[in-house]
Image (cartoon, rainbow, N blue to C red; front, top):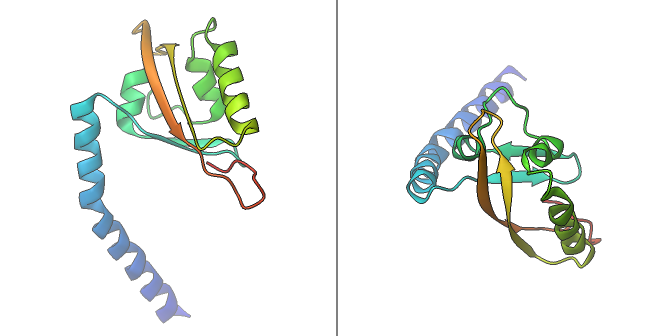
Amino acid sequence: ATLRRRLAAERERDAAAAAAPDDDRLRLAQRAGGVGVFDSDLHTGTLRWTDELRALIGVGRDVVPTIAAWNACIHPDDRPAQQRRVEETLAARRPAMQGEYRIVRTDGGGERWLQVRAEITYDDDGTPRR
């Protein structure tokens, strides 16, 4: 059992090392393009935000990325339209969504317009997954 744990830990470490150059390239591309990336799990309601996205929306690493936290960043006047866009996209099982709306930076940096593009994946039964 100890050998299996050690081998599993080595495989995990090797996989992380192999992914590091891709992570570096993604960070460079995001900074150069002024973009950020998020990944959502619609089953659990959790999100992962890149540091570049956090910088765009003015959210520190102390903020847990959730759908509720994301929605709280959207300008109050733009939330209803954005919520409708999401609901319509998921109800129609569209593979992609895009929109433009204002966010209110939580670090006191004022308002900012964001263009958002999302690719959506669905489970075999049609339930939205990501």
